[in-house]
Length: 257
Image (cartoon, rainbow, N blue to C red):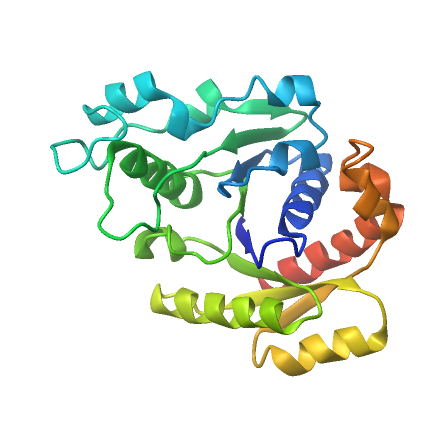
């Protein structure tokens, strides 16, 4: 199962990514959790301590690795470098292990910058394609809003594009934009999760606004989740209710995929 999770900033996509990673790992499955959002927060959502997080080096910042694999120094453009570098050993060599989860932090790259194609960009894109298309593990990618940094070949390998939506027009607009982007890359199905639902009207608003995007389930607005970051607790420890809601979403996802 290869899952990409996106949505407007602040809607809870990182919490969803961490919950799904935990649920699959708890079942004994090997999981690769990929933090592809430049505002990287997946490590803390998985319950990794601040001291350990400080030791995690994003792939985009591994200058020696990038130069070794691409043949060019990071930050250069317009020169000659390998566009299909060796990446198959990166998860084992540079991932952070926690239980059955391997966390990979991609780091900041000019993914969507017009005209930018640099060595670190080539390495990250090739790594993402390898993880989605060529690996056997459960792969869950926590993305920034939009999917511009995916190639067509990579996007077609994703089993489920999930957009996390909160009650609000901007969140819905992001979801509809992601659906259009995904369709342009050959993705036939985009799913939604309604998050921060306080009342039935919130859920109904989302249902009425997302058109033919299929809703996998809902997660209630929860003060415990809001405070979990302050307490340095992962969501699956902070709220039993939220974990149970995520488990139902995972079951619905597997029925469709």
